Image 1 (tube, rainbow, N blue to C red):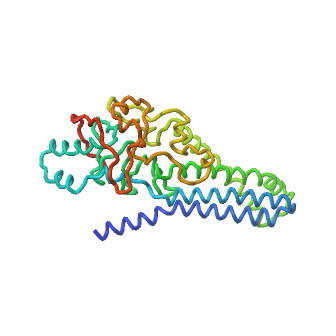
Image 2: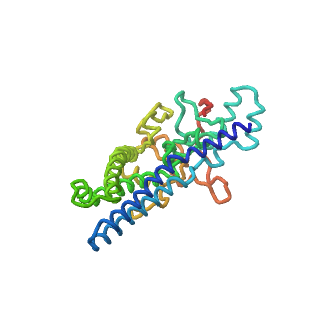
Image 3: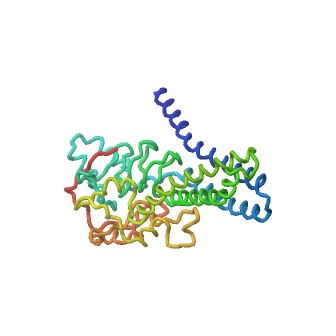
Length: 335
């Protein structure tokens, strides 16, 4: 037990190494640009002030979004999806597998769950003891079920999901802006140092290396950001892009695609003035998502309007389902 606890502790420590690498590169870029380029190399005062002002705007937005991506906790399913004490006791005391499945089916009747496992069974996590909401997956690194999980990113040492997906996208976008701004403003001094117009000195190494690093990161980020823009437009997560979500009538890679505009609003919200600010504006609570084919929702008046399915302040449910989940549906134990 002590060895296992020690290994987990070491794993948590080493998981911060990618974040420390990114932080070290960014801090070096700050020193190289502000001091070696602007203060020690550029002689034109107006150019120097303009560069410093714009650079700090980019640096603040990049740092803000990176911070939010790292330290926004992943959202997990609410108590409605967890087995209550009585249900857990009843489930554990039951020896017959079929009876256990029926107990879980009865619990699933009260929840807005449309996706299934590959076998067609309702998804259940035996580690977290929860029925998985749509688009929810268990992260083995975070050791929890994460709402609308996209992937676990080592560069932010966090799960990217419902609670911080907008922050992650903005982090990629402002990282690109940060890199392209540095490359564009450094380019003329890069050529001057390269051609020997400017004298050799410590600034030469920093400016030359700054140009290469900015371009290298920009190219990498461009492909990653473009891929995630495509995912947002199609309303898919990275996991769903590799394995299409399964519904009662089978897999459907476009099951959550409700149109480009609505797809964007699910992530960024309806107020477009807040789209580029790292504050949480995503729609919903992560437990329910509109479907492309709303016929399954229209069978149930509660699920046809996601606003009706929310928790009240005291944790009670603000409605009841008019239609039950098909009791013939089985439960599959998943990790």
